[in-house]
Image 1 (tube, one colour):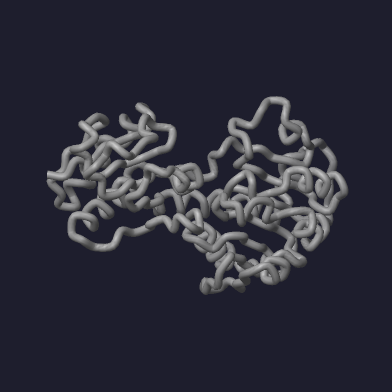
Image 2 (image 1 turned 60 degrees about the vertical axis):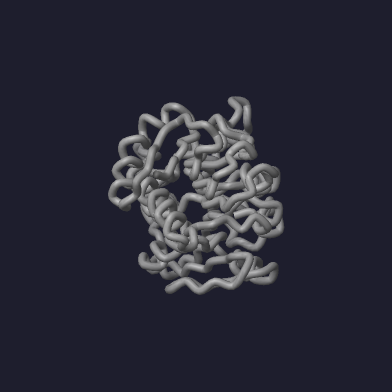
Length: 310
């Protein structure tokens, strides 16, 4: 018998209980799933940082912590978490992110704000988008989410360039890495989408210098993490016309404070961290597979590199 503790907000239990039980059964696991166990009885924790568990030391039998979140920046430095930590890479979440990023890139590419939303009785002819193949789009981050978004945009014939900290090979995408590669990826890009994790090495990865490399009148889409963008530099670039607009789904402080300049800035679209969310049904399959692997002595999938922070 495998004991699986679900440690997240109570509303998540109502959402996940049935799909998790079904996934564990489908995986052939003899498992007990609950929100409470004696700590010394627990084999696996299905985990969100805003749940009740923060000290893992009492869980003396623990084999792995299986995160419900894709981002693990709030978990990797926990000194009591010494067992393997696996982040959530959920194909349902990936599909959602691809749809959101593609939608906002196409919004900018086609000029939807100008041609559809501003219907004020004025006939504005002559503004036609170029072909997608004549637009350079840069995707910063080529992990599971970034690579999927980059490939979707490439399939629409955009000239897609991607950047990662280390070498990557993504079909249909011109890949760059390292400091010099970042400049090459950003140079003359009309649109930049950020899909990197939040680590000390990625903070302000899109700064004033990087924005200056972009094609004048370009666009920024950030569904990754708030600290990836230098907020002050972004406002300056928008005010100067170097950038035409930014759509931001993530922020350094969430919820975004009511008085924040992003709410009132005419060149900023705020969305409330909705670009993609883990789906209970597909995430449950990922969790059950990792528990099956743990019990079979196989390597876990999506295991976190603590040194890298993701």
